[in-house]
Image (cartoon, rainbow, N blue to C red; front, top):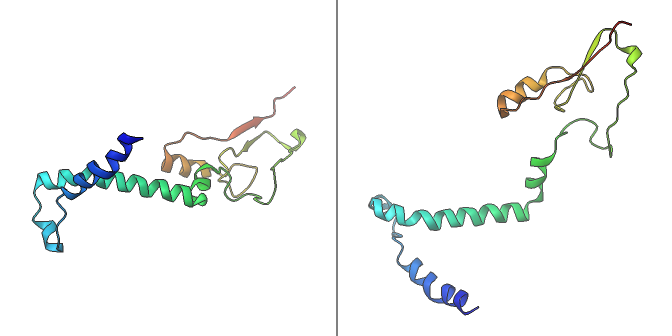
Length: 131
């Protein structure tokens, strides 16, 4: 525990006091390249700490990244649709990206999703074969 205490009480204050932080706004424009390079590590550390705090204290930020279905029957615990094979005339395309406005059938919304995200989603095609 002593090395950590030494780091926080001695080395960190010495490091921070040596940073080239100007007293005025105009002083930022007079900083040299070495001064700007010296400011990168604490800036990155503060940005990382801020982002980690945001994720810790804003649970909605984490949820939105993991949810696949963002608009279809959200109040249901689980979405289950049944389509009778006899109702399919020749073939049917079913959505797999959860972006369609015509659930459970595909309306091509995956094309926009794929373009925006670089994903490769497509529909599930069900064809009726002749006997």
